[in-house]
Each structure stands twice: as C-alpha cells, then as structure tokens.
Image (cartoon, rainbow, N blue to C red; front, side):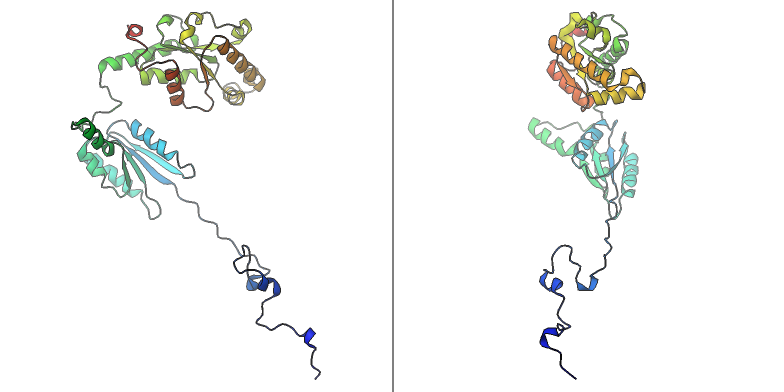
Amino acid sequence: MQSRPACCSPPPRSSPPECARDRPACEPGHVGPRAYGRVRPVDLPAETPATPVFFVAGGTGISAETLGNMMLQQFPSVRFVREKLPFIKTPEQAHDAVAQMDAAKTQDVTPLVFSTVAVEEIRGILSGTQCAFIDLFGSHLDMVERVLHVNAAHNASSAHGVRDLGEYDARMKAVEFAIEHDDGQSLRQLERADLILTAPSRCGKTPTTMYLALQYGLRVANYPLVEEDFERGGLPRPIAPYADKCYGLLSTAQRLSQVRSERRPGSPYATLAQCTYELRRAEALFRAHRIPYINSAAMSVEEMAATIMQTRKLSAGGTSSAVRR
C-alpha cells in the first residue's frame, strides 16, 4: 500500500480544530469543540420574590410609613409588599403582630419591619421577631436622653393624636375655611387667609390646600385662573388686593392635558394646545405680579407644601396670632 504524502496527512486526532486551538478557552461566547454547532439553552434567573414590609406603630402608623418609605425609595429595583399594623398597644397585640410578621418570612426573603412604638414593653416583644426589625423610635431616643440629661416618658401618645385641644380646634377650623374657599366658591373673609393658591384648573390647588390646612392648621383659599383673567392680563379682582398672600401653581402641558382628559375626554378644555396656552399665560401673570410659583407636575403634595411654606415664611398655625383671631 502506497504511503500518503506528509502534506496530505490529517492532523492527529488529539489536536483540536484550528479555530478551537487558537481561541482562548475563556473567550466569551466560546462553546468548545464538543458543543460546536449547537446552541446551549440559557437558564434565566427566576423572578425575585417581593420583600414584605410591615409598618408597626402604637398610633396611626403614619410616621412609620413615611420614614420607612423614604428608605425604601432608595431601592427602586426591589419589589415590596407593604402592610401597616397600627394601634399596637397591648402585649397580646404585639405577640399577634410578631406571629403575622414571622409568617411572612421564607427561606429566600426576610421581611422588613419599621417600628415607631414608644412603649418599652411592646418594643421588646416586637424586637423578638425573626424579621429585620428597624426601630425608628428607640434607636434614637437614647441619644436624645443623653443630650437632654432627662429620661424619656416612653408613653404611648401618638404624634398624630390630639395632644392640644386648641391646636386641634385650629386645624379643624382651617379645614372648614379651606372647604368654604375651595375653587373660589366663597369670598367671605378672604382677608383672613394665610395663603391663597391660584392656578389654571387641575394644577393641584385643592389637594395642596387641604394638606396645608389639615397638617399645619393654615387657612388656605384657592382661586382658579380662567380665560377672562388671561384676556384682562391682571389678577382676578377678588384676590388682587391680597397679592402678597398669593402663590401660583403650574404643571407641564402634557401632564395637565392628561389630567383634564380623565375628567373631560375629547374636550377643547383638555387639548394640549389649550393647556399650553393657559400655562404660559398663567406664568406671565405670576411674573408680572411677582407672585412666586412652582411646577406641581413632578412634586408630591408634601414637597409642594414645604416649598410654599418656606417661600412665604409660613409656620404651622399661621403667620401670626393676629391672623388667627
């Protein structure tokens, strides 16, 4: 049998193909000679389960919820399932809360517990949970005691309860004032207002008014800007004498059109052109009369309230005792 020329001899069986021999073994995407020509299935990670979150309090739970959510907002990629457990005042209620929270714990997920409970006995029971216990009250109380050189009362009074009947009465009167003077319905005793919000329709006047009244006891009226006001080029006559109490609200044309379309779909009132026109004229009006204003489109009612109070130098209960008489 004739021998094959060396130039025609096949490579040894142990030698990998040139493409595999020359390519680094760790090169991304390289599947190796045995898998060549096949696509390996990729195992996609299972969806991460949502993390249970409990807001526990001896009162309404508003503080625990607010502070807890401020922290959770720093983790936008994580899904949460929130539950509020308010008015935990007895050991029995605390034990029930612990059982409920522990039942939500799994091998993969540890629930978060944000607590503002003040009573030490109740806090001690709650801290025995298998969940991650974040004590928003006790963890800072020790420092305050050290600074003040006074022991805290550790009582169950709620920050949102009725601590001062006079303060509570003032807030309720502020709410009544806000309801009466919503959207320009009444002009009676407008001079007693701490603040007058003015804006085109659906820019957030009413919710901001009610929040300032209920949360801070401010007497707030709100007045709408309409087509006639833009044509005249001046502040509406009823609020013109009180320009120093006025504050303007604006939005984006897209957002305003969206909100108005939910109320009156397909109407000229909700068109992008109409919204753009009203917002531009309103801003020009505010500038002409040196009325401060903010864009409410991307702000929460809490942020709006804080900005307004800071700009107008308002404090809880009004600008002065004379205003409250």
